[in-house]
Length: 86
Image 1 (cartoon, helix red, strand yellow):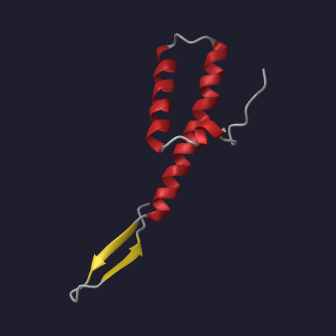
Image 2 (cartoon, rainbow, N blue to C red):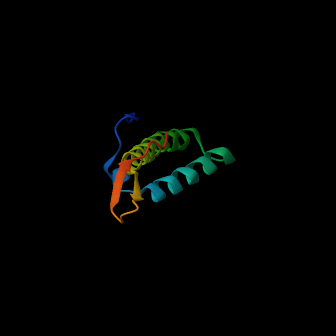
């Protein structure tokens, strides 16, 4: 059995939205926690789950870098600044 590289995210996972990836990851966790999965399938789930987790983390990091604070001054002008949400 060929091992997948957890650092490399497969193209089908890259195309998932954050919500879809998180939903699939949650389903994998539920299946693994139930304990009714054979060893080979558990390894497949673990490897896919690792990629899904990395994808979700990348999406969150990208979103975090885009968060800005918009302010309205007394004269009605609008300005924005990056927000540190860490």
